Image (tube, rainbow, N blue to C red):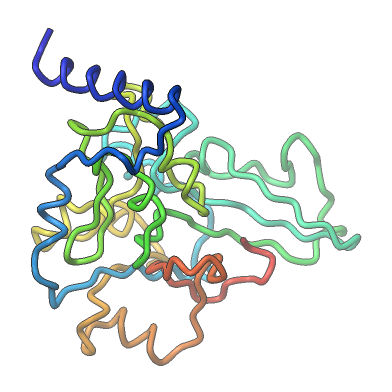
Length: 258
């Protein structure tokens, strides 16, 4: 058995024993690599994402690109980013679906096996979603081993070598963006393609969007086009009431979206 597996199994057994004994997880202090990284001085770079819902057509190119770039199996229903379709009908109901995360687009008129006539539709639109890279991330707070940590430029990452798969971060996220990786069996989520943006590249989903519905930039740079939009136009964030201070901003966000 490898040292990595031995350490992970040891940590799992230790925490399981603590829970069984009724001890709080806060009683344990395990030094993870993320803790050292988070202690570095504040950066003059803070990544922020901008989504223009008025430009999204639900093509699914972003989802395909994300799966390929980040090695999330193509034929599983989980994904780091996804697109939701909202259809509002005359009776006041809002119908929402996201088949396979919107990977292959959407079936015309049919939502969750229900066919809706054009005459009944009053409004329809698409909303891309992804990790909100919160300023106060709940997932970081609940991770008992420090596997989930925040970089100095605001991106929340998961250290696979430390993650024990307890699922606390998945339950804590108010946006439902986390999942268990079907292969690695650890917590997984969007990282703003950190391996790309730190090299001056765009995220895979931004590169793949043919309509410019997705953009990423440095919110600490007043001259950044994304920052200028956030500061001068009417933008919104999801679930602001949770106090997590998300850094994914939306243009044209409908009040029905949560």
